[in-house]
Each structure stands twice: as C-alpha cells, then as structure tokens.
Amino acid sequence: MMILKLISRLPFPLLYLLSDFLYFMARYVFRYRNGVIMKNLRNSFPEKTEKELISIRNGFYRHLGDVVVESLKTLTISKEALRKRVRLVNPEVINAFYDQGQSVITATAHQGNWEWMLVSCSEQLPFYVDVVYQQLASPFFDQLMKQLRSRFGAQPIEKKSSFRTMVLHRDKVYITGMAADQKTTNLQHRYETIFLNQPTAFYTGPERVAHKLSHAVLFVNIRRVKRGFYEIIFHLLDAPPLRKEENYITEKYVRLVEKSIRERPTEYLWSHNRWKKTRQTQ
Image (cartoon, rainbow, N blue to C red; front, top):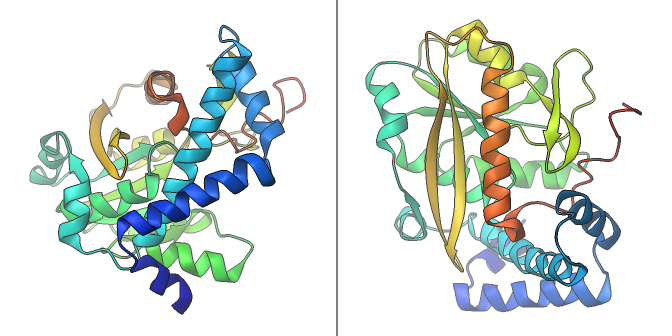
C-alpha cells in the first residue's frame, strides 16, 4: 500500500505517462481481454465498421489506463485539486432532496471515471453517503478499493447487508450509491430488455428498495471533458410518490445509460463480460 501511495503522489503529467505505458501494454503486449471487448462492441454496434470498432477499443484502452492512475491518485489528492477536475453541473437537482429531508438512491454506470464520481459527490454534496459494493476475492485489493472510496467520507457497505444498513440509517438524510449496469444472475429480481441491441438482464434493486423505503432515485452520469477533467450530471428518475408502474425506474435508467454510451463509447467498461450468458441460457 505504501508504494501505491508514493506513486499516487506523482504529478499528473507523470501519472499520465504511466497511463500511456498501461495503454501500450494492454493493446500491444497483453491484448487485454481483446476477445471480450471486440465481441461486446460488435454486438452493441452492428452498424459500425470493423475499423470503427477497433478505434473504439483503442480509445477504451487509453481511457482505462487513465481511470487506473486517476483512481490511484485518489489516495492522496486534495479536495481542492479534485474539485478543479470534477465539476458538478447541476447539483441543485439532488440537493433539493436534501433540503426536503429526503434520502435518495443514485444509480450509476461504469462509465467515465466512476471512482472519481463517488469521491467527488461525497466531498461536494451535503448528504451522508453510503456506496454499495461487491466484496473482492483479494483482501489486498478489497481493502484498497474501500480506502479509495471512503477517502472523503463515503461509507462502503457490502451488497448483502445494504438494505439493513439503509434501514439503520433512516435517521440521516443520505445517498445510497449503486452501480446498476452489471449483469445479474438473480432470477427473481431482474428486468430483461433490449440494451445496445442485445437481450440484457438488469438488477432491479434500486427500484425495489426505493419503493420499500420511499426514496427518490437519480441516475448520476459522469462524462470526460478532456484528459483528467470530468463533469457530473444528475438525472431524476422518480421521486415520492413513486409511480407504481413496474420497472418504470429501471427502464428509464437503462435508456439513459444506453444514450450515454452511444454518445461516448470509449468511456464504457467494455472489458467486463456483461453478456456472458444470453437470455436463452440464463
């Protein structure tokens, strides 16, 4: 951990040289998850040429290198430096709920720098912040990610105990952050739809919990402005009294994520085997 902290203290120009090295290794040496990435891209964008898909893949490799070094920088970055690099475009959308004493659930996606999105929101917003996470197999990396995510006050909570924690925190005005774009094997709590031209199952946890606890739900999107600089935009999905239409919130979330990916495809986490199982084999 000490070595990582020392690396994180490097100035950004040197960190981005390290990112360029990671890009070279991922693209030319290890061809990091190339098969998964290209399969995902071909299925998601059948209208694009192979040349266009390769360009997106290469852009993804560059972006992933930046996310790695920027996330590492979180270990030592100051609040002032982070604020200069991550701007909340419309914080009034979410802060209005704080003023009302209304807790919220934020549904996010693995796009842009999702780690900076968390620490920036926990540092700049007045809410108490919980973030739901899946425990990693490696104790070292599990501890590292918890340290990164809690740097400016967010409290990581393991997925299995997340609902219980939310109930215990009812005396606070809080945000519960959930990354809701990854695959789910939960047959009971999932919503199947067409996403990026493919049958896709989404976990409906944010919507179900919102109805149980009467929370507002927002999609939080982070987009890259230029290297090392981002903007965060809040989109309201629904607020109490919540609509009773089944999967209304989840469907609205899915379409906003899809729109965001189509606008900036290099910033999505294509290396994740999101569509490992088809609708027929699930």
